[in-house]
Length: 185
Image (cartoon, rainbow, N blue to C red):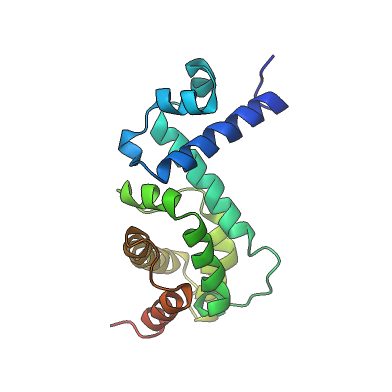
């Protein structure tokens, strides 16, 4: 039986996700259908629907996994409150986005709200709160405003970079980010 935690279920989920990522390299998310995913993954529609409600649910769940992988790459890094404002933070972040630019192009183009509205606790605890405390911001409400402000700015900068095919070198984009964060207009 194909239950949520068995290997077959997990293999099918991975296959579905890989098909979506592959298709995003050549197609806009709005042109990808459940049928095309099922054909590419060689699965039945019922298998797809046992994992996801629709293509956008698949994209949303995959985005959460990708964000967890992105944040996970910082688990072993020594950091203090100023870590967020360094190339040591941004270069791996930008390289991850560049390696997965087809996926991020789709998620950034469908963005109608803040990229991290829920499930942001790891980012909050590992980056936002330590950075805020390091800079004398102790009220969580004020921290949240900074978080929303930077999140919106970084998101739109990433969208521009990804929409242009990540042609600007990572180190140059990193420099832009650091300059903007250190010298707000």
